[in-house]
Image 1 (cartoon, rainbow, N blue to C red):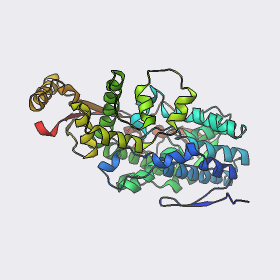
Image 2 (image 1 turned 60 degrees about the horizontal axis):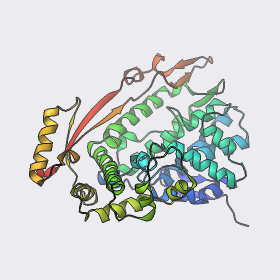
Image 3 (image 1 turned 60 degrees about the vertical axis):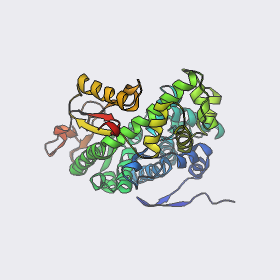
Image 4 (image 1 turned 30 degrees about the horizontal axis):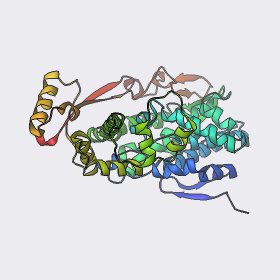
Length: 404
């Protein structure tokens, strides 16, 4: 009989235990194994060469942090059954299963507004049928419907184990130390009051460090101007390919990608859609881009070369939108330089918005020693929290480097 209670050696968290056999079975499922071929951070390795880790890495790490958090809560006297622990670990393990190629960049392009969480739920329900309903509690937690709220919050909130893992993991692989949070300290400060997740008030500075680390990682890494541009180019490439395909052009592409390029918009995913989607990964997009660099359509070919040869457009960044005159000038120069009339396809204004901490929606609550709960940003001991509750936007103008 196969031993399924394995130990995985993770470079970020060390040894990760698989304490339940069903977790091993879900990890072995083809839907989950596909995550080995889905990048955690899209094309971020074009800017940070070490960022080649996958959604598989992240899901395993988040599961480990869930286990650690629940074990810690049990030591504080919180009653958690084995069934609940298993369900919570499975829920966070599967939370990203619906990610498409290159993670967030293409999820709406392939399935027409089918956000990855919607696809994850759909795939969870498919696996649940195979497992005779053993994942039902996990799905309930994933949807935020479980009667004990703290389980739902550990899976999805402003301080969930998903964020704890991806910040520490992405910091590790990019080498950007500003995101290196102390996950063990934060988890050890977690508590439960009235079935809601709270933080012992002595953990205030670890939480503020987490929030500021997340803010720095977004502006320094995820919303880095070149990273934002690369992600934008991927979306444009697929949009261009789909437009050409629906106009009747027979583009070369891997068969599963070709299926979605030829597919008209639909509100509901069919069994065929699901089958095709679960066979699609980053390799299909890379192969397609390599093929399309030689396509007769100038715009498609140019954009693909930008990515595959890392000859990315030039960018300038601003805290205010760029003027119409400045954008039109770049378009005119592109048309003249390349001898085309589609310069607007090569010039883009991209914006990125970030709210570091939302004090209104699912605020982080601190637990005083007397049992009183208080909002993080209203706690007298806080230093930074009340200053990171406003959102900010940056604008990026991208244009062919040939006209710079």
